[in-house]
Picture 1 (cartoon, helix red, strand yellow):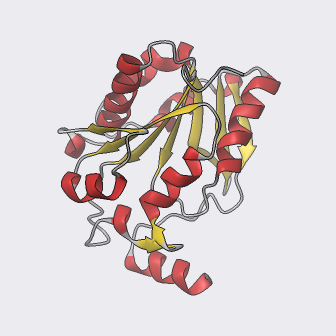
Picture 2: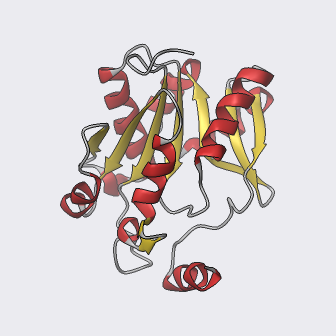
Length: 202
């Protein structure tokens, strides 16, 4: 295990969207005595020896206020309206600029309320155990976020355009992908109804 002074694993949390279907920033919705975004950050921070980057865009100033910690790098994506790809590219570029020795990177979103440190750690464990270049969360008959990529896929990630996301690369390299079960990974918050259902389930 590498010491935390020189972490080889990055976790990039994508939090740049405008939450247009919700009508207010989903990143800042109250959840578990904190917010959806802070919950994701807190769980990522429990994973040993990682460097965390949070990509902001819409509502940057509000979201930045929510984070306020020296341990996390904030990466502002001025092109967030272009689509998910621009946030993946910006977050990965900033991670590699600061930590060029990074060997693998997990991409996560801020609206999966059931994400946990165990989910991140399972991806890392399966990546090392199965020796595949991609470890993707499996739920609802699909593969998605959080998803871990070995550095051999960094160029593919940096070449993403427009609305393309990590799923494009997962699908392209399925034979080099291990599926890691993430229970309740299919639950994300896109609408007020999604949020109401989440809160009532607590």
